Amino acid sequence: MQKSRLITVEPIAGHWVVYAPGYFSVHQWRSLAILTAERLAARTRARVVVVDRK
Image 1 (spheres, rainbow, N blue to C red):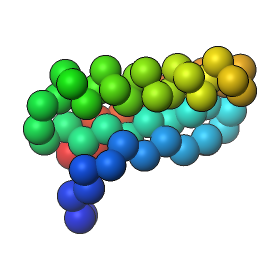
Image 2: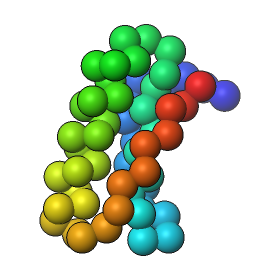
Image 3: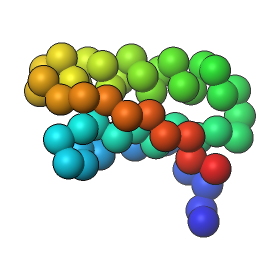
Image 4: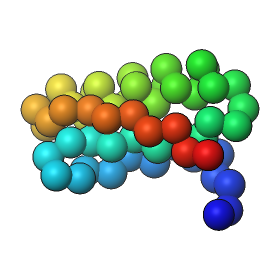
């Protein structure tokens, strides 16, 4: 699988699923991903699921 530095957010089954790269600076990326998703969730009233992409 190609490694991407981008955080991707996908709406799946009523949740915002966030794929965060888990291979560098995990904490920083994870918190950024969660913040991004929470903003989307607040706007769309959907739940948020965060997935570490390996």
